[in-house]
Image 1: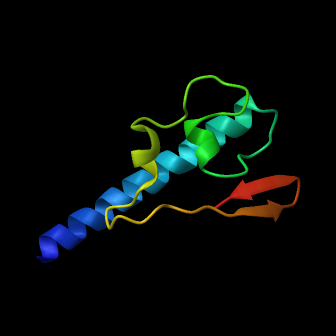
Image 2: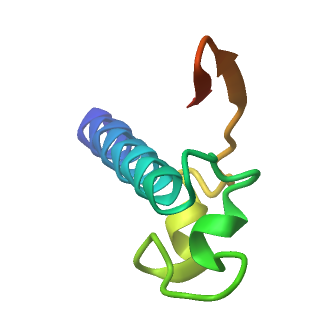
Length: 81
């Protein structure tokens, strides 16, 4: 069972990395503005291709909970956590 738990943690880390990269790509393509919520990575305002593969499923962690994000002001811009 420990192996399954470790696999879930590893997948969650990979998911978070992909979400972070998608947020950075979103910010680059939107003049430095971070997404207001994770749904904007799936359905970008103004249309266009999603920033994450697998649609809304990409926002669900290995335990079945939805990932969350917080935009934290940081000096000259916003940092997404």
